[in-house]
Each structure stands twice: as C-alpha cells, then as structure tokens.
Amino acid sequence: MDPIDDLPPDDGPMLDPVKIAAPWMDERSHTMLREFFRVGVKSRCVLVEPERAQAILIDLDRGEAARRLQEARQRWPNVPIIELSVNHTNEALFVRKPLRASGMARALLSVRRRLRLNDDPVTESVSVAPARAVAESAATRDAEDETTSFLVGVNSDVNPADPAGWARAFYAPEEFLQGHLQRAAAEADASGRAMSLSGVWGTWIIPPGNGAIHIDMPDRQLRSLCVVGMSSKEVRLAAVDADIDITQAPHFTPRDALLWKVTLWTARGRVPQGVPLDQPVYLKHWPDLNTLTPLPHALRIAALWLNHPLSLIALAERLALPQRNVFAFYAGCAALGLCGPARRAADALVDAPAVSPSGMRALMSRLSGRLGRGSVPESAM
Image (cartoon, rainbow, N blue to C red; front, side):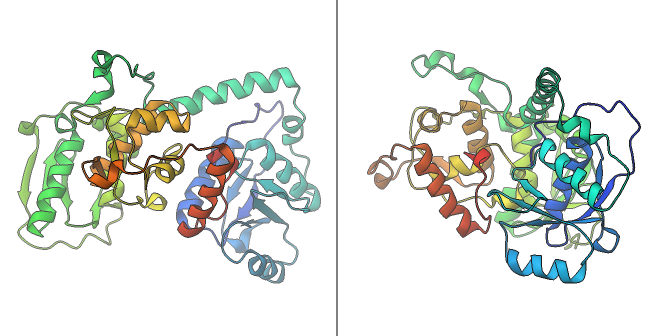
C-alpha cells in the first residue's frame, strides 16, 4: 500500500475518524492498513473490529470475494462496503489498488455522506488546486524516498565497463550484526541446537531452522544497530544448554524474516564482497515474500531471475531498474542461502528472454496466482 499522493493539511478542525473494519484480511495487511490510515490519510479513518465499524473494506482480488461480499451484506446490512481492487468495479465505494490517499479520501467522503456524518475536510483535499497538489506530492515523494533508502540505499549505478569503480557496490557482512547473526544461524543448523547471541542488544536465542526469535527492540533501534561496525570481540556466541520455547514470547519473529530485514538494512543496495557483478548468479528457489519485509520490485526480479541465471548488472538492465534494487534483493536472498554464483553447466545453457512490459505482466499474474497473491497491481511492474 502506497500513500504516494498524500493529502494537504486541513484548514479546519479534524472530525472524528471513520471506523473501518477489514474482517477478511490477515494481521500483516492490518498492520499495513493502520500505517496507511495514519500517514496516508492522516488518521481520517481508523481500523476497528467489525462490530464497531462504520464501513467494511473488502479486497476483491483475494479469496472468495463474491461470498465475502454477500456475507458482509447479510451480517452488516446498514454498513457501507468499500471495494478494493486492481480492476474497476461499478460500485460508488470503489478504491483502486495500490491504495492512494486521494482514492481513499473519496471513499471516506462517500461513507460520511451515506451515514449523514458531518462534512469532512477531505472534500477540499480531493479537489485541491493542481499547483498545491504538485507541491504536496513532491514532499511525499521525498518522505517515501527516505523510507526506501533504508532498504536499497541511494547509490547510483556502477559503470559496467569500469570494474575499478565497483568497490562502492560491496560491503563485508562479517563486520556487522548481519554476519554474527548468520554465523549463529549456521551453527544452530549444523548442531541442531539453539545458540545464544549476546551483545549490546542483550541476548537473542537463535534456533535451528526458521524458528522464532524473541526481539524486544523497536525496528528503528534495530535498524540503527545494523549499520554500526561490530567486531567478534563485541559479540558472544554460545550453545544453549536446554531447549527454550519462546514461541509464546510477546515479541518474536521468524528467523528468516529477521535475517532478511537485518541484511537489507545493512547492505542498503550493496552485495557481499566477492560476489561477481558481471558473472551469472542463480536463484535456488522463490523466497517466501509473503513473510518478508516488502522490497521494491522483488516480484519482478525473482520472476525473471528464477529460471535464467544472469549477472546482477544484466538483471538490472533487463528490468530497467537501478542496480541497487537488484543488489539488495541478491543480498537478502544470499543471507537466506537462496542464491550464489552460477557454476553448473545448465546455468549458461539458455539465456533469459527479452522482457516486454506486457510479457512481464502476464508472467507476474501467473506467478502471483500460484503464490496466492491475486492479481498484480500495475505499480508492481
């Protein structure tokens, strides 16, 4: 969800927010909705349980949409239903995906009118003058760029013809928290026993496999920790004497999800030292993107790369993406053991096809169907 076209500040007082429920969305979607409602439409609506809702939000691109629409009308007959979809419907309360502030503002205005609520200052936002809208969207893009830079950095592309200038595309994971976390995970897998990883953050218990890790630390603090150099003298790694069940801890995250986001925050659009930028690399299998921190263009990169080993530079060129997006995706997959230099004879047997926009959309739609993601929004292209 992408609050790109943010709303201008109100000239008048803020009214009570519209209460919206999304009963068939999972917790991850709820988290994204809360952030969009808070930032994208400036708390003009809030997420609540269905019993308190003034409107019901249904994603028509997921699951049994027709059944859910019918059930919603039966269970909440007097509550307006906001239909969310990539494809336009004939309903007045339709919002196109990915969510944007202007589209949600129009839906909120319609909800308030249907329920005879007081006039909402979002009216002025929807019909804002073009000059003001341009200024506001530019400010929003700046904020969005800052958020994206945490994941892919801000480096410009390296010159493929000048290997001497490639140094800025590399980093050494072992000099950061990422490397110590990867070492703990590797030893846990090798021994089949959990490992304790201790440092300035306290102690984490790193399980074998993709078990849960108790992380009692806000993301902002963890993100800052990721970019600080950390020697082996500052970290203690030891085997855990007894099995510890932390699956009921108040703050826990799957090991792969933690490794992924720690790697993205550390790499910031770079790749580990020694990775060839101009030689084919392979992707072993599709990462579970549903459980990982969203990365811009991850679906496009994986879709082209999966069956066609390419160099990282060539991959970025084929997709017309900044190299930092491809480098970040590679770094994350490498931390999970999903990719590496292509050394098999078959890896160089078939070249990746040229990708047209329509061809990529068709491929993405098929892959997204298999992954249970529904239709792919145009912004993913």
